[in-house]
Image (cartoon, rainbow, N blue to C red; front, side):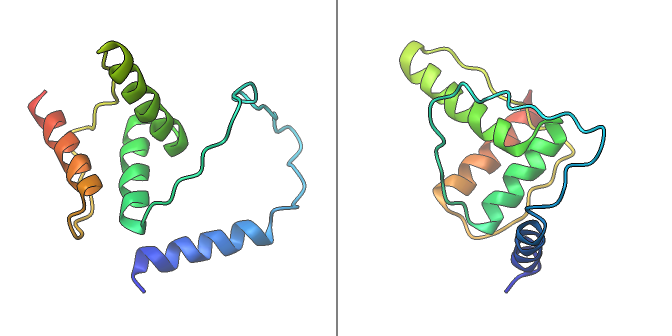
Length: 116
């Protein structure tokens, strides 16, 4: 098991152990996407998770927001031909792993950000 996989397992276990922890005083609760009609679950391998989190962190947004924006953007592009995506900063180095079509897409996006 790789370091990343171990880290993901540890974080998952920690999250599950503390799922009923009390909410800290002063915390503001919100559910901004509550009006959305469905939650869509996808599977990502550890490399894809790290790549998504790295790009999202560089953009200053949650990884779920980035993934949703990519999906919504692609739907918009398919329907209207309009595009709008998050730029990957030039200093971001994505982990290297085997090359799946998705990984090639991520590296392609990273190259595009260096060109822009």
